Image 1 (cartoon, rainbow, N blue to C red):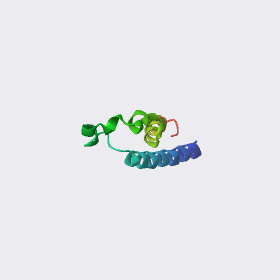
Image 2 (image 1 turned 120 degrees about the vertical axis):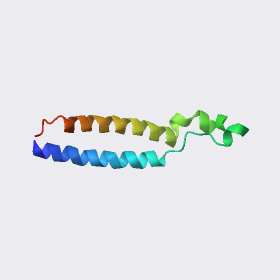
Image 3 (image 1 turned 45 degrees about the horizontal axis):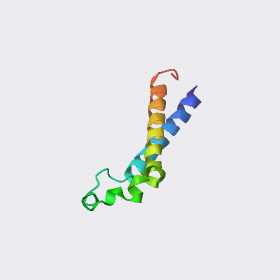
Image 4 (image 1 turned 30 degrees about the horizontal axis):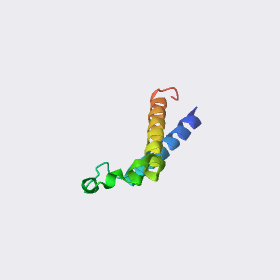
Length: 80
């Protein structure tokens, strides 16, 4: 059981670092001055789900769920 706790701890640290890096890679949610000229309605703005930004958002959600699940499993005390 101690080996499983160490493995989960290492995975937990790796997920934490990856979440931090992905969040830092994402753009801000404010449209800025582009909203004034209508640039927010461009092809890029409409297809954001298929872009790199959309992939980063989906990956962030998956990793945060994994982070919460691993934190809960490590905190249950079943590895003591």
